[in-house]
Image (cartoon, rainbow, N blue to C red; front, side, top):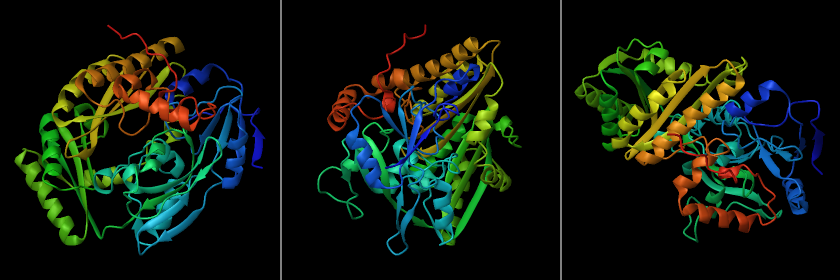
Length: 452
């Protein structure tokens, strides 16, 4: 049997959703029960006995920011952090087999010691677990080169809601039916429990070259990003900051800062750097040298769970990030529509990253304070509603890599359309007793009235 801990002496189990933290500042809700299995059989036994009388919510590092992990009184937290073994690193075939509770930073360090990398660097990496990265459909800072988590996962071992354990299938690719394990990538613990992942890994690049570029306008910077990836180059990183975020970064840029890095064998890295220089130069950008890139790499994990929680300690304070994605021609109007909504409540910043030939991610940050907790929550909600409505109006996706949880629940059906019925049918088929996480992928939250 898994060890069971009555958590009556500590606050309830939740992730790092800022609104959940804000609501907890005024008091302490009833605590939950947590079980910590150390074997797959213990997970299977637990789920096979579950009857739906209380919901089971898988948890890992709890670094997510959506409220997907926020247990109601009586719910059971299935803590997977004891499933923490790196089971195999295959240096010949470049694969790794790891359990769901493995810490992302621990895995990366173990791979680096062998000259390898997963190439998955979310800012939460020092805290996040592999199971959490899979369950939230995560993306990392170097995704343009290495891909998102769905590109890195070759297979999953999962425990279904009835206790059945489905093991990962072999091979780099299979055409024997749909890749059904992908149902669990981004499912937020709503279909079952991720136990183990088989991951694609890469060799560490022999050389990394990076620079900063100062663009006079945001539009010029976005055009340079588009041109770079549409020429076929896959940079290690490209991050374009709008004017306000550029100033926040304490950059020497007068306009909008673009940080761009390339990696690979020396000749390939040099050729890639040449493409970046050519495109940025043609766009009128000023070369700022290596310092902005080196500074970014040094500070890449500064937005940690602890820092976010610290920023929310003061009564009436609010802060959050909203990561969305859109096609290249829709990014400027999206930025123009969302920024005033955020700035009206306090501070609104934005940078663009995770570039694809078809578009990229717009990552908004907002913060402010209010006289009362009620006013703070209202301001927080206005920021989210304005951003989500802008995305839906302009044909952008309302979430790029943080997941759904509670924070996007009111709008998820609007984006999914008829695919919401597909999700509901899959969920009811795999979890007929309604055992698993009720907050997964929007849960059953009602839609809010649209603001005028």
